[in-house]
Amino acid sequence: MGHKLYTLGIDVGGNYIKAVLLKYGNEQVIIDKRIEKIRKRNPSSVAEELLNLLLERNKLNYEDVVYLASTGEGEGVMAMGARDSTVGLATRRSIA
Image: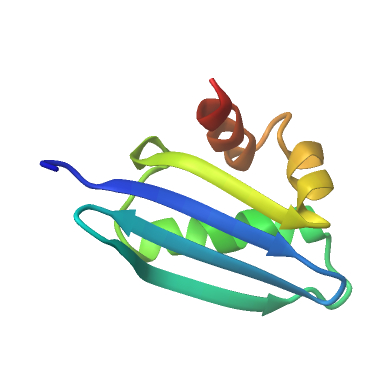
């Protein structure tokens, strides 16, 4: 496989949000991950911050991501944030 494929995964729970960035080539490799406590913040905002952080730290753009998966309470959070955010752009792009 000549080029790399990247996927993002996010799990939004009641207290924590976990995000992971994977690279697919000859093998699946976790290249970055992050866990953040929600505290009294908006879960959608925390999720978007985490995804942006993973992309920035690895010098990637949303266009480099071929799939964004969410689980837990994240499915509702990601759908709510999908209207105007960059998270929504990645979500819509992965479905198209």
